[in-house]
Image (cartoon, rainbow, N blue to C red; front, side):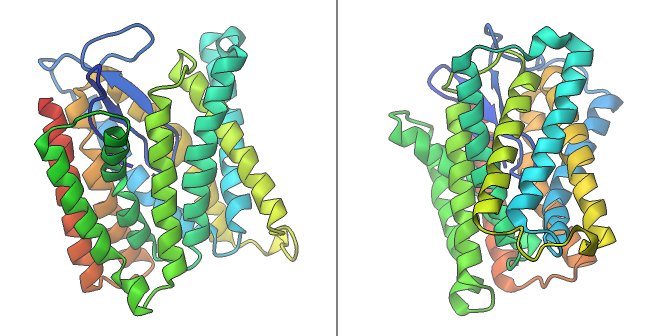
Length: 338
């Protein structure tokens, strides 16, 4: 499942969560601070490499919803999500150990516990529920419902005592209006309401994980944090899948070739390559530019769902999607000025 950028916490940090279909969040402060990844100076020249990395994040993370929809055609949802992130986590652990040395994977119990909790919220709760929902909900609609994440994050910040700007409040109101329009297919019976509500719950859990990741003591190396988040969330997904009995009647030999291809693509491109490009962008480009993926990804997801899977572009999806994207743009733009 994949999710957009949101605004600064009291110490003026801009949270840029990765999409719900991918890897977890990083927190980028407006000015360098110990233990964080500093955003590039505003005056830094935007190179071709930056645009190339941004294109990867735009397209790959925008396609994760399509990939999930294809995977769950023949693979049980929680087993699919769990195996994806366990595999990606192990691969990333190997890369971290090779790049930084095995010592880079060592963390104390407190930070390990924080990373595991965030992983359960983001990957088990966020991604796992999206996998389950996409057995009945079109990938484009799921992407648009997840795009409301910045709205929930702003509301969670308000509940935590913060006071974002008026533009953020306006974005929340607009986003909730868009969410109301997007739920119409479920209320009208065109799409199962249960699936729509699952995606809304997934977005809420992803938002809680996003906010928690900036407040809990996390491993200093963001890649190390991602390893433990992926492993915890992935193992949690496998456990939930087994408890749901997804293994009963599941025959690996009956998994379609396109489901295998999509699952491999989610592991390699969605969870490793795109996340690496994203992490590099946070150190090499203005965070305001990186944050633009927040309103590009859902558009890419809707277009791919329509072109490849023939998903209908109904008026609630088009109108609600446009409203949600506008709300995300307002929130991101407001936080850039903060």
